[in-house]
Length: 208
Ligand code: PRP
Ligand code: URA
Image 1 (cartoon, protein in one colour):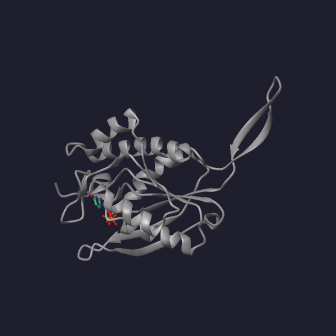
Image 2 (cartoon, protein in one colour):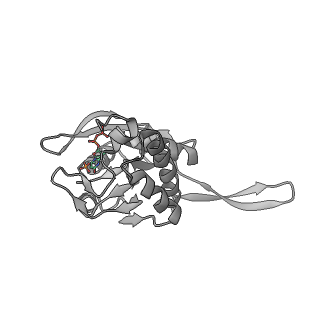
Image 3 (cartoon, helix red, strand yellow):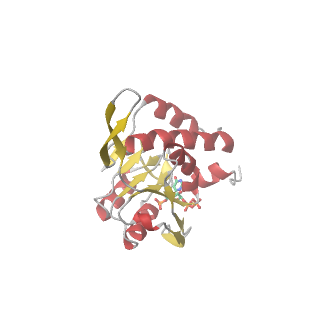
């Protein structure tokens, strides 16, 4: 399932982050802001428990989140969304999966993995701004499942039909939340119109 976050605040910020004129400082701020809104929506049905809270006046029937939350950025660009998640869930644990797309084959290569044990039994939130072919996200889900995760959601900023299809086919149990589902991939497997190379734009490593 792919869920598009159509709220005007998200779409407004998306328009600015896409703009080729937006520099890396503003790009990073917008990635954080957009992530906060998508995360808020994505946690709509997270498991909660009912508790009674003693207020100064009486007892209030309350709900609190009842699952360990583990956020897993896909290195490198996923790190640009980490601050946004931690703003909303300061107690989240953080795992890392390092994947890059081989420039020739366009296939994901895993180069780093480090997860907290709570991925087993907890709720894992994979973050990556771009799901293009879907190969990186599908590989990250695969790695987490191999380490025992069975409750995974994915938050991205921009994706496209090809990426959604690959991830959904391989992992129909994993919902994807996105601010945009763009038209297509180009011959370099970049999302069109997308926002370019998210890692380069976040970290100021592009050559133009
Ligand atoms: C980008 C992006 C995703 C991946 C998407 O990372 O952040 O991880 O490509 O492509 P896919 O859906 O076709 O797999 P990249 O490989 O450029 O690495 P980086 O984050 O280190 O820049
Ligand atoms: N990775 C990116 O950063 N952008 C794309 O459009 C595709 C892959």
